[in-house]
Structures are given as structure tokens and as C-alpha cells.
Length: 75
Image 1 (cartoon, rainbow, N blue to C red):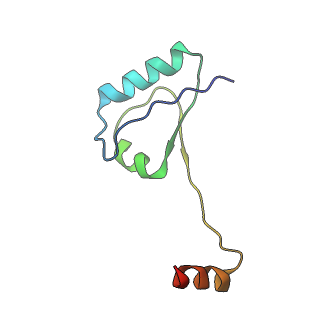
Image 2: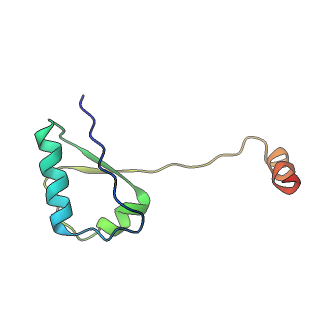
């Protein structure tokens, strides 16, 4: 599939016009789904999307908590 990336400045306040431009750009390149970070999803709440917008979430798991603690304390 086609991938399109559209960066915005950190702390950008999204408007409905931004969403419309993102959707227009996505359609122009054949994309049918948008993906955003959980951080930006909060800022997009309340704005209308015609194209499905998924939220990418991640969880950090530390396999060796004692080793990680030692690494942090030794820095």
C-alpha cells in the first residue's frame, strides 16, 4: 500500500481545515486510512473525519528491571 507522512510541529493545535487537508492528501495518493499517535489523538478529539483514523499506541516493557535501574543510576 501507499504510505504518506505529514509532519506537524510539536504542540500543533489541529483545526478542521488541517483534517480536511490531511484527508485530501491521503485520497490523492490512494490512502484509505489515517494513523496518528495517542498524543495527537487527544488534540484531534472533536474534529470530524471522513477517512478512518487509527491511533497507534505502544507499551514499554522492560525485560530486565534491575539491569535497567542500574543503567539509569550509573548514568
